Amino acid sequence: MEDRIIAIVTEHFGIDPAEITPSTTFEDLDMDSLALAETVVVLEDQLGLELPEIEDAFSPTVTLAQAAEAFAQLRATAAAAS
Image (cartoon, rainbow, N blue to C red; front, side, top):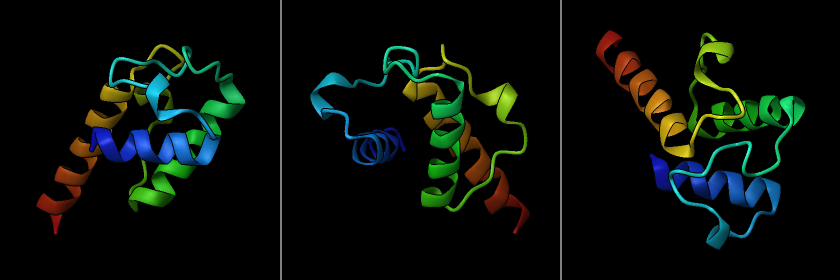
């Protein structure tokens, strides 16, 4: 999931993949709250998942690894409910 999120972020925002690691935060990528909200929407769309509480899962200090974990947990919950 980390690799997929990194790929989506780099592709959508034109960020050099060499600048990103799982420990990179959204703040490190100079994303303000509007860019972060856009990122969440793009990730939800690309991954086919919707985060119920954006505020709890994402902030500028969240790492890409933490974002991946939030989506992985959401996917596991959705799969268990099916």
